[in-house]
Length: 328
Image (tube, rainbow, N blue to C red):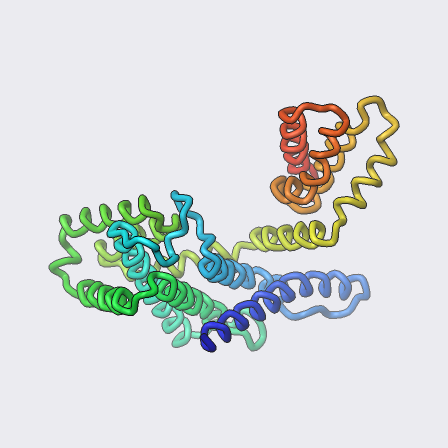
């Protein structure tokens, strides 16, 4: 339990640290440009690469909280009150795929370590990519702990993982079309019983690359290339902005401002809601954030003024989508 708590605390601290870098570095860059001072070297590049860390840290936290996206409603990685063969197979398949992705990412890091490239002064690309094997390792650890309360089933999961590692080194299986189709069937079967969507997509990618005699590290290399895109840091930054606005009750103050400005117009409340939701969505980058932050405040207000439930729900939902048309 002490190890588990230490890992949990470390994950939380790392999340705060990465989000701080993601938010502070652009702010410092703006201030230094205004003052005509030199900013942080390679600040935009570092912010881009922090997106990779945010993504994998988020995956680890989602695994810890049993919130990975799947096709079923019941979380897969939780001890079952009644043993289910299907869910047990899905857990083992998920664990094997995570181990394979870990192996591919650690292979990529080792290659990058042997041929180091600096992305900024003193920061090497292999160090940034190190979050991938660490993330997969922590996800595998969480899956292992949450798979069952029985030590026997945990030991069996480890043995099955070792067995598939051994099988992966034999060409008789690697070149077999029958083994390929059977493996695809097991992956689809696992998704039916609650395996996360990324397990299905990642598992199929691992399987096809392995069958084609292509290094699995190519998956991690492509993941790195896509995630460090210059446009992607806006997603976690908008999410952070929405969270801060929602938790600080800024939505209520903005509502009172808009009601004071437009409330005198006949039918003013719906008009205020359209302006408010559009403005809030433009600030946070997502209509879902606006609905979560404002829905609990606006829906009872519309009901109180005599508007129907269907009209109120539709207005709040559609008004939030308008903000996607406006900058930033």
